[in-house]
Image 1 (cartoon, rainbow, N blue to C red):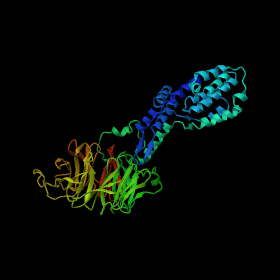
Image 2: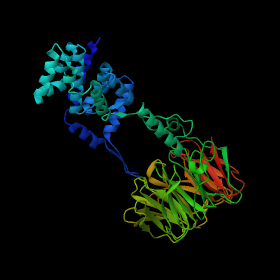
Image 3: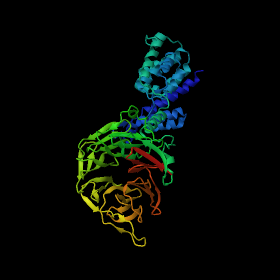
Image 4: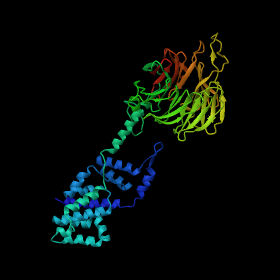
Length: 565
């Protein structure tokens, strides 16, 4: 029965009518939703995004949603699963299969007119005058022909009403098969073949790429809509005190620095032999899913790597070395994006990215703090004032200030825009052990080097300052002491060499020169626990996972250990 063909004809014509509307709305949508990736200058047309959603709706049989979205955006897929089969259907005259597919496509008016004209003539040849009449008189495309091409339309009216049909005359001396071939080629030029489930495939590829760069920890449940690993957000902060994994370095080398990526899926180490390696913090194994590491083509410097920092999106890694060179790497590929051969005259001790990843601030043994532009590859600002090594540097959360810590015993707060020093202060000197426990502890009067300064995770107006002493101090940006955490007031203190806060600032962890790990609670204001003999030799530093209760310490004997509760 060809009766369904009439319905398809009318439906197809109606769809064509909606497609013939002006494209103003579509252009507005495209301009509003065009996406530009800053790093790679990749433009994504909003219409392509709509098409992905349309395909998903079609495959999920959400027909009403598909129709509404197509009408609202004036966008059509113009895609077929199999163009060759579509052409074969046309060449075989299976119009009951072809016309429903035409109803879903955006086609030029002349192509539609040629197609509908030919189908009308074939219906007349088959003696299906009722179907031919429905196509001619009820479809919009033929209605437009009636107004704009009266002669052509009248000719078709003649064949619909005529009792006899002469194929040679009707088809203009061209065979029916040849006309079908021309129509098939014309329609095929207007459509594309799109693999099924493109939206889900692209999401899958994106997630796979994020996993390869460490943005997705292995085995973690991922909330696609929120773009977060939900399981990591729910952990209550606890004190890590149990050895978890151990990473062993070569006999001739040891880690000078280490840091976790903001996404939590990577821990980077910089070694005395100049190599930079990316590790899985959960398994303690080298990330061999990064192709360059699997091929032993590691990121590296010519001298010892003293400082590392990830960008906030975990896609870039800044590294700095003993010879004053600064490099910025693409973590996923290991490619060096920018190198500053003369970033400083001395070894670089600390680096940090700006939030947008366009700048890197560095501190050095040359006593300077400098800001470098990644786009220009040039020095943007220089901060002078320290009289000895600058050991640590960081942006404040609003990036209006830069804070630095120096071996001259001072902390400086700088205006990030003008490079002027807004404030200089000295943390309290170390406490000398009591001779009489009933007496108050008193200070030695010495001025120790300040080894690190870190913004407080829960208070933008405060910083955590660590000196080579027996205390970690929380200060305001004006230098006022808010809280002091002592390792020991009544026994010979061991010098703290590094510290780090937990993600929510409920804990501060410090390591001493003899390998002790001190766990301070900012809630109880006490030293809650001490882990003795973290390493068999001097501990060099400590880092905390951005979400989980996972701590990393590293030492001069060539090992890095992770700790968990």
